Image (spheres, helix red, strand yellow):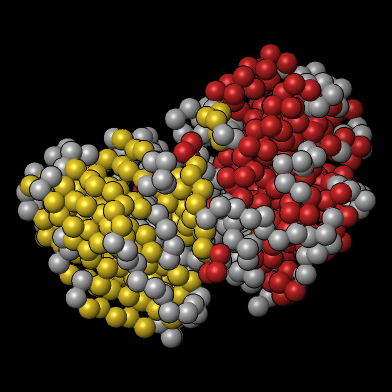
Amino acid sequence: MDKTSLAIADNPLRTRDDLKRAFETLCEPLTSRYSEGRARLRLGATGASFPPEVAEMEGFSRVLWGMVPYLAGGGSPEGLWQTCLQGIVNGTDPDHAEYWGDTRDYDQRLVEMAAFGFALALVPERIWEPLGERERSNLYAWLNQINRRPVYDCNWLFFQVLVNIGFRKSGLPYDREQTERNLRRIDDFYIGDGWYADGVGGHSDYYVPFALHYYGLLYAKLMEAEDPERARVYRERAAAFAGPFLAWFAEDGSAVPYGRSLTYRFAQSAFWSALAFAGGGAVPMGALKGLVLRNLRWWFRQPILDGNGVLTIGYAYPNLVMAEQYNSPGSPYWALKTFLPLALPEDHPFWRAEELPLPKTAPLSVQRPAHLVACRQEDADHVVLFNAGHPSTNEHAHTSAKYEKFAYSTAFGFSVPKAEWGLSQGAFDSMLALSEAGDNLYRVRRRNEETAIGDDGHLFARWKPWTDVEVCSWIVPGLPWHLRVHRVTTGRELDAAEGGFALGLQGDTRLAVSDGEATAAGSLGVSGIRSLLGYEAADNVQAQANTNVLHPRTVIPTLKARLGAGTHWLAAAVLGRPGGAPAVPESGFRVVPEADGVRIERAGALVARLNRVC
């Protein structure tokens, strides 16, 4: 283990000084990686959807998300800050070799400008006042490009807002009309109960807490005197969101991996940092402190740094397989947004408060705006998001895996496909995968014709992997067992494979297959799947390496069936329990065919009747 990994893992993360030291530890390996003109940060050789010089500018800017709060709180990393200040001077100078360049429409550099707007608003004495007249003119002109360029109709709208807040706070000309127009458009993304979608019809994932709410809370704090009504609305929405979002966290500090941009890692807890920065209220300060610090402790126990102490692309370990096309070597440093509490003084209630444990949440949390039901098993410290699915999709990598699996787990994570051939390459945990018979090329759910969540938390989706194949899926959530039932109507012969949770493979992992059941168990926990109706065989599929976001090597208990043209019912009880848990009780589920559908029972009691019409 390199010295940075050792130092960060040994940090107890209890006090403000501990958090300052963690930021310094993460930044120390970067000091030798700035370019000669200090305007670019060169952290690796992998590519992204934008040119290398833009990727290096991205790396430069993302450090500022932690640096600005550090400076605002009185931190004095003079060597590194002087490096950054020199980089800002050179990067915004059109006559310098390392000029960051003129932007284009929808340019990645527009994203990165937001950190500069934040700096101008919070620490103008560090970023603006030290500059000469020409240097100020260059910085303003470079940033002001954002007011002449369109951005994507999603969380990107806030980037223009933040730059203009910075201009306004620094006494510079700003675009009042565009700021107001963007803020009104962002209101269109609000879908109720504290939830946004990332653009009209978009997904509700971590971009809600670590982007839309985060920037809204920055606005609420920075603009509360100038725009008190909007500041109030943003605080109220964040307060409404805090309760559902608590259900995504386990007591050990981990949070459920779900959706895209997971390489931002501990940005998962940035919402709690922003809530504290904006004044808290929805959650006690001691609980906010615990949520932030426990999440950081969990992350700093994971192998997320390379041998030089630089954050890698990946989730719980370095992994390009699950990455987005826009993930450059500097992208992961967006995680530094979580260091926002460094802007709070030592005597702030956040730092004076005793760290409190995770607030109690209901075992089942129905989160309809996000199409999710969160389920918690406290005795195993396990959280699962059960997913009804979405009516729309996008073109990001592995969209089906990141948004359309039936379940996402703090302990088992989820998997993405390595390639297109067969079950091992597809890594179909928590999915029903279908292939034309004998073809070995599988399709899964990508979008839904219809979804619903009942008052009892049961989930339903209707989806069509082919025009002549319709699947209706029902999920009865629960832990350690949950139930899945599918009605498959097909005009072609199909091979079906239903995957349980992916268990990390270790030396003590034991695999078992019996009639209609597959189980994998070891020190990481137990994963199993049992046929209740329709399946013909069981197997433990060893997924290809690096497909799971938590564990490099996994096994997926899987059920299989051959389906002829017509209508078929499939049902499975799915088991997932982490750690060296005691003996797992029986599921109690029973699925009984009836003339017009199936009857679901649990421990002898009727749960539901499902008809042949979805």
